[in-house]
Amino acid sequence: MPKNIKAILDSTYSIRQEMTQPDVPSRIIPLIEDLINNSLDDVCGLQLRWAFVRAVDMLYSEGIAFTIGAIDFRNLSGLNSYFEHSSPGSGAHEQANKVLREITEEAITYYARKHNGEAYRIGGDEFSVIFPEMLADEAEPILESMQKKADEIVKKYNLENEPHPKHDYLPTGAGGIDYGCADTVHCLNREAILNEADYYLFISKELFLQDIVSRQPNPELWAWDEKNKHYQRKNM
Image (cartoon, rainbow, N blue to C red; front, side, top):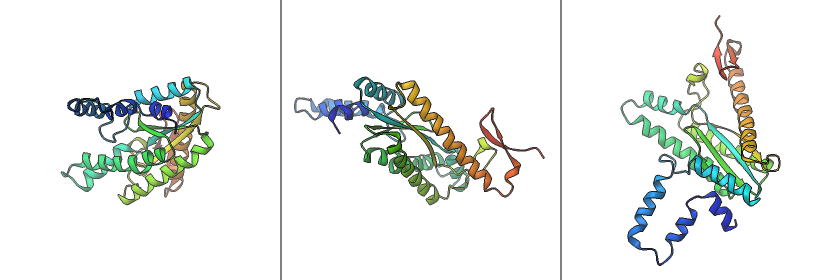
């Protein structure tokens, strides 16, 4: 990967490179490292939304083609609920964060960087990845690999049937991921590429939920609430 792309994807790259120079006073290196660490997500160690937006805008301005993947964790709050019930009084929040870090590191970040991309934490349960010089069709199987790896971790922790309170306690599991992707061939600016990736993400989430409903003992008891974008039980 050309150095300029690495510097675009990683907002800390240039300063980390400067820190390796012999004329940098050793006494200030720990201070700079603290500043860098404090600019990252404190659970997963990823760059945040501002760095993602910066990278997208710079790639557009440099004329570098790329694909972004929009990723949502399924039922992130369910991780806390699971450990609160399975291990009460034993640090449920930190156990949930441990699983979140594992999924992030071994699924999202691993596959992003394996293919010369980068991962970012955009919000609580929202993540994004950027793949420079790659089309959406090429990124799709990589994102699918992320999803499969996340599912493996979810099953390892017996989280695959954890109920989702937003969807009236439908057993969606907790910790899996849905995704959508878009590329600069079809999207000419940041707003367009984010909207298109989010559109395909929503389709992915809806198809997953439809599949969960179809496998319930009485699928006809569940109805999609279009206004609130969730499933709820019908009043019988």
